[in-house]
Image 1: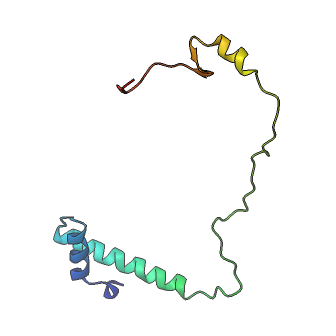
Image 2 (image 1 turned 90 degrees about the vertical axis):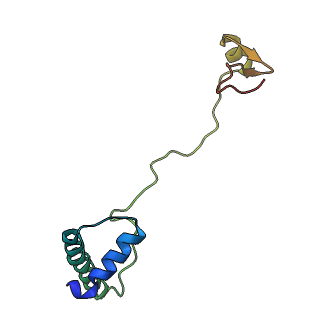
Image 3 (image 1 turned 30 degrees about the vertical axis):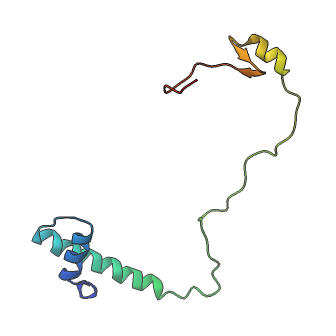
Length: 100
């Protein structure tokens, strides 16, 4: 398994990722990455002709309703209930020290 990737490859990638690995970790990761590459070869060797590509294992449906215009509250009535309004909009306190 580890033939696919060498200790030097693991040390090089660890250096690029700015990881400090012990000799034991380098040996373990070399074996694990070799196993991952072997599994990738197994998957790549499968005959997938005629199998459509999928992005999700289950069929998805849009569960959102269609947008429908419906009567709403009167703007002037709503603004009359607000603590402060200005130019047809809600007036709120300034935040984050914004200039006036």
